[in-house]
Image 1 (cartoon, rainbow, N blue to C red):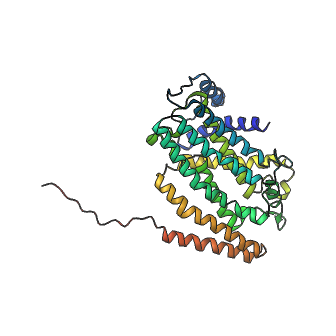
Image 2: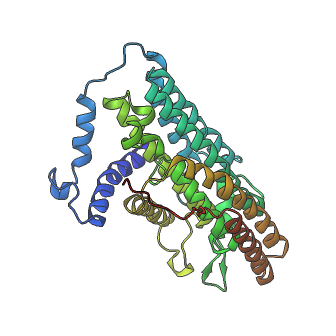
Image 3: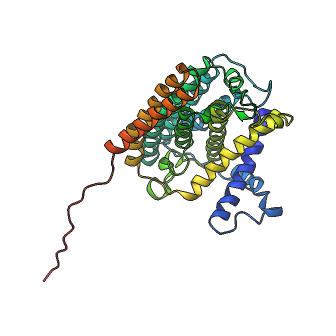
Length: 357
């Protein structure tokens, strides 16, 4: 059932993304197949099924075949530990967060298998770039989860959601995103999720203008569609984990709205994050690979560790206003220090023009 829900969401997302991007760019999206173009996913699926599966003659056929299966399986397993509503967690595991990242880290292996198994220099180069960026951003992705785990004292996603069920003054939600460390960690987690999902502006491995289609260069037909499916399932998984960790999970934003089914609130929050994914794609250009790696190691990683320290200050101050202010002060101080030391504006010498006489 879970797989059916997310396959349906994948089909809807594939057409809605193109419709929303079209609206943002002042053009029509899909509008030919079915009413309002809503049958476009069916047409795409049929096209992928009937396309010829071309495998390079010198490719490692077993590795080439297994790569899309491994990457899709990892994304599906990661979806299994997320609480979608009250008593609606498919696999209740005490170390659910640990399981999520353990399974998600196999994505790098699958990408390497795709690049190596294709026996193509462009595929291999694209795979290496993908693995470099995924490992670089997996560190801040995991470290930004540590403050939540530290404050709650559990790796169980259900207990993390339960810790956010309270309301300040009877109406304000007790979500971690409303704390200084939680808001900063949420932003860092979301940016890292963009990279892990291979989404714009961090879709460097698939930069069509630079490197064909990255590790998927030698894939066609349904195997290519499986990579495409895994990318979206990974996006759903990262967004679902963000909702669980920082946005109160399936809890309503206000107590008087608690009569609405819990799973509705989860999917409303998930839909908002998915819309932001699309919004970012339609707004920002692709960045250079050196800019992306500098951003990961010189800014994201120090700020992720700062969130851990800030959460400790907030926690040991008793969750009071003083702790909130001290927590904010720690984050602001480190942010301004990084902004001073990492000034990227190059000091160019005055330009002189020389003309041939």
